[in-house]
Amino acid sequence: MPFLDYELVLCRVDKLSLAFGYVFVIMGFLGGVYGFHLKDTLQQVSALLYVGSSLGVVFAGDLFTLLVFWEIMAVSSLFLIWARRTPEARRAGFRYLIVHALGGSALMVGILWHIGETGSLIFNHFDGGIASSLILVSFALNAAVPPFNGWLPDSYPESTVTGSVFLSAFTTKVAVYALARGFSGLELLMWSGAIMAVYGVVFAFLANDGRRLLAYHIISQVGYMVCGVGIGTAVAVNGATAHAFAHILYKGLLFMGMGTVLYITGRNKLTELGGLIRSAPLVLILFMVGALSISGVPLFSGFVSKSMVIHAAELEHLGVIVLLLNLASVGTFLSIGLKLPYFTWFSTDRGLKPKRTPLGMYLGMALTAMICIAIGVYPTLLYNLLPFAVHYQPYTASHLMETMQLLIFAGLAFWLVIRKMHVEATITLDTDWVYRRPSRLTYRVFSVTLCRFLDAVEGLSLRLVHFSVKLGANPPGFLAETIRHAGHVFFSNRKPAFEPSDFSPDRYRISLGVMVLVVLLCLVILLAWDILF
Image (cartoon, rainbow, N blue to C red; front, top):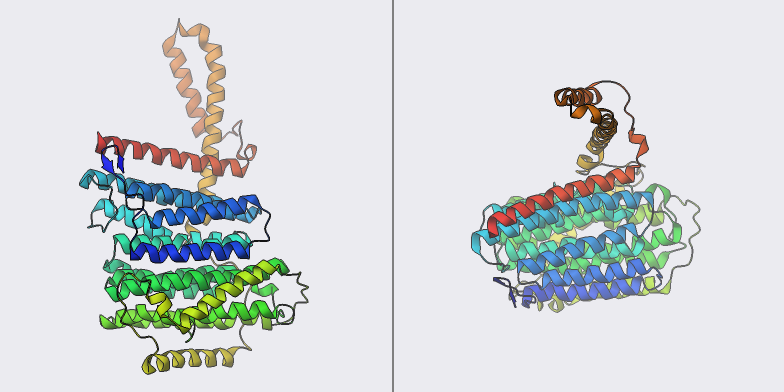
């Protein structure tokens, strides 16, 4: 349809967009079943907006439509964090908002720059340049590619039980779709994805919070997809798409499992869990379907999707990439397939008394587990949806033997050191250190500067009244007095009339966020004016 001097494509349907569209609809339904017991309108509306806007991005054929749904997706997902209504969720939500506001601003500037260079809004493969780089940064931020990954493990564990299921499925996979559409074959993505796969596993080992551990494994698993997009061949893009499809389902199942544990016990830290095998055995069984799927165990969905990305790297003789992806696979099995269930269900009994699990939670997990097994047993169900023709056979003797060797020896290593393994009640700062630690200093400097500014304004207003009579007779004297007072306020050591304690931290966070957005909006307006007019 026409829009100003441009053409918008509101709905572009091809095999790539359909593959993501199918799994988004499936996961939206399964998440709704899992959270059917909820009576919270905020979560219900936010979740539906989140799913719908994700579909809007996937089927957007132009950059303007993509941007609109991209921002709706960011705002609606934010309320799934805030809906938990805890101080930690509120703080994490503010940080999530600022990070995604910066990413959305980079996307808007990149789109405007792209219009100025090409005169077109059509969303296709980008050829490089400053505009493409800005758009790439925005996509990479939503995909949680390091160093833009801190927001994900910072915010997802603080969301609601049902909200984390939806969050695990959409934002990062929408970004994978956007990367596959716009930047397929970019070598930088290949190396970033391979490093990302190992990076997430390493930090997952350090996590004490169960959902934070799963969040780090989102980063790791998305690394496989980003790597496949970077390799760029038909087999690799098929692998990235297949793994995104499988990952959405089994990662949703894993978050359902840990969310159920949080719901029935009120606890999510491994140092506070243990001995749930007697009270929640069915949750363990369903959780393990997701754990075996993400670990790439034969007959489960991860085996037929993850291996396709590794196979694509082998076809291109990328030995280092293959090694990194295999290392990440072993680490995934150790941390999710073994460590997480052990410390949650089998370690020291903490005497917890879980409450009753709603039927909808069991039904949502059971349906998701059935799909994970169905894809693993009959991969043609998935392969028929991929954008290119599939000639890959996962169930070969060599592949089965190689996979089982990795898993068996990883399991043996875990068994040998199981008695010496322990978890510590600590918080590990990742790249979120950048906005957690320095932000305190920034807050203090900003607050003191603002207080001194208010003090100066108060004093100047009083002197304005005092010297108004003299203004007509002695303007130079009034100007000199004004400058003297301003200098005295800003450069003296006296206590200002206003102190930072007079203002709540939330007001400062809101003020700082609004200030950043206003500055960015002004820059966007100036850039748009220069490009368009």
